[in-house]
Image (cartoon, rainbow, N blue to C red):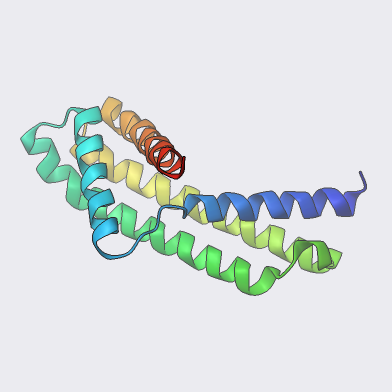
Length: 150
């Protein structure tokens, strides 16, 4: 494979990952139901006490809002600027890669900021468990969607 083909594949896969991270964005009652399920799932997985839950959820909600805004901005930028990755010039592809890298850096900075905030309200083991619980919840949601289609 030539360099241009590899770059286009990387851009396409990165775009797919960003879109897939937004797969479960719903509106209205469906979104509320998903959020309710998520709260229950995370609370159970982390075995939050009443006091921990009262301190944790406001911080987590701010984190979720900021992360959603970041992903939405990245998704909008990529959709507006990418067009068809196969039709991109090397310069356009490089610009798209730089924007994806910037998104990943912003995402990492946001994670770092909120890990520090979470450590103020939860034991460090539960902070680690939080990120695993989020992944497990997404997997469960995707499994349910797949089962529903079949």
